[in-house]
Image (cartoon, rainbow, N blue to C red; front, side, top):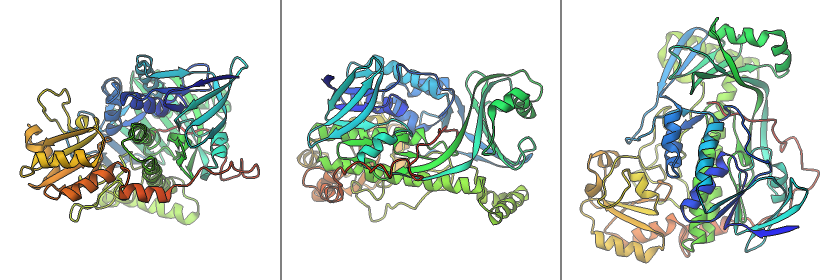
Length: 572
């Protein structure tokens, strides 16, 4: 058996979530080894095509966000139709002034290629292909993975920590970690066709159809993609047979009902059944579960890969803080707290959509029909029509790392297309800033170097600096809002009080807004933001920790609530 030590972190799975985690860790200076069972990367069609602006901003931190945006198709409006009548058009707003559009459509194949190019140029990342994971174990110091290799050999790889991004079919790994994958699967399937055709007027908007004449009783979703390609998703019965429809010519007829007699080419096609499942734990000791390995949702809302990238960023800065000794290891428990809450939110949103799209009884069908019919003539009734709430960053307002503010409080899930006001737990609006001698041109770029402190005009900068340096060991940046806000957009977004100090985490989420004259409150908020040793957050998280348990017994493996899905494809 071959044995070797990997980098500090072992990333299991070389898909887009694993790639993102590896690149973000390397950006922090952490050596990474990526394992994948495949011999090489394989083309997979469009799959997860719809990337949200804040995910593009994360990818820009590793050098690919702008390229994804430039190569993809930009859209900022989602149109919803009932039969041939448009019910509403949903725009998407931004509290700041992001350089990225609300959504960009680009095939997952191309996204992976761009990430792979960055990985190939990164000396801190080693890619190991052809290693299928057979067993995972851990002790108080390390994680050990045993693999079977394509050459017939066995291998054993050891690392300090592991991020498992193996996709939804990672049942063996979850079983060995004692993690269940409860949820449900839906009966209906979806047919996907990526077609290349010239369809004027459809190139910059998402179109969702309820009960169109060319798919009566069911739904159709159309997304524009690069190179005059359109992704069309048809809801089809559970017994749908793609091969039979293709052989009979019915597939061609299905496509022509939408595009007419235009010439077209099928670039890729597939059939999938959608699922809603969540891992019972997203952190098991030294192993963090991310992406589809931890949660899968129905595709309406583009909350699959977008949420997986959020997992990767959350994991990367926290693993870095622990590995550098800047935070208590209990900080890793906040990964489960925060990202599992995000997954629950995604499940609630997408399951509500699925209940509207696929009613489960006659009463639900009647209610849906009444809402659709009413919305045709009453624009106000469109709020009751659910064609999918599109991806948005989660808000960590209930996290132990977040310090509540007495008046800057979270108002709850905002209306579709809106973002919440910037309060503790919410993502910092991104706006242009200017800092002499610093290349960063946007406020989130400043945050991604460590803890960012933004102060009001009456704050004693030296006192804040001394307090921060005494409180935590993390990298710090301290700026008065007025000194860097050359456009006025930052003050407009934050509306800071004269004595405010805004504490911003490395993932650009606001951890606290405190009075800069209160050194004790500031120090406490800083320590809680990273679960520093001895902090209240570290204590709360340590009490919540669950030691790694035994593997699931054979009778539970493959049960109805933990069955590996047939396939999940994120559309939006």
